Image (cartoon, rainbow, N blue to C red):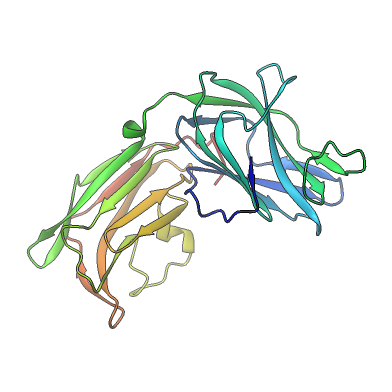
Length: 256
């Protein structure tokens, strides 16, 4: 297990909020069960963490008795108030998991440690290859504007979308993918509208935008692709057509 690292080593595909109730001294998660795709990354966000306490996650076999280090994940990275589990890969598909907080930092088996656990919850892996999980959208020139291929995509929980701007972006360009109106023209009432069905965007240089996470709300989301001129922070090229993302993410998989 890796500790004391920044959490930017991998983008999360699933995000689960963990709330500490200071009155009841209980940890409650935003899901009753979790089912994720193989190869995915899971971010646990701890809310209202007491000062001096650190977060952790534990996995067990399906009967909930035997603790399995890191569970199905290749690596677990612990931060100040969140835990990132990276690359779910396992021959076993059924587990249980629980979150915990402990006073201080380290192994909670210390007899002087104070530890608070959540309940054990079912955890399962759904088989899908990295290629099946990843949708690539090409951003291409369309006269003085931009177009995307394919024009409509369909995603579900755990899938990522990468918009490739390498054919159109110049040195002074910053690519932008925006659901709804572009921020430079009309800030959204709800900032989450900017991300559409995704939890976050990762910008990789001036050629790629990666959409990660899933808000769990099914439906059609319309978006635009843009190139921002970093010299004057204006939109220099905008999309044409009507790009759409059809989100079939399961609202019960995680509460984003």
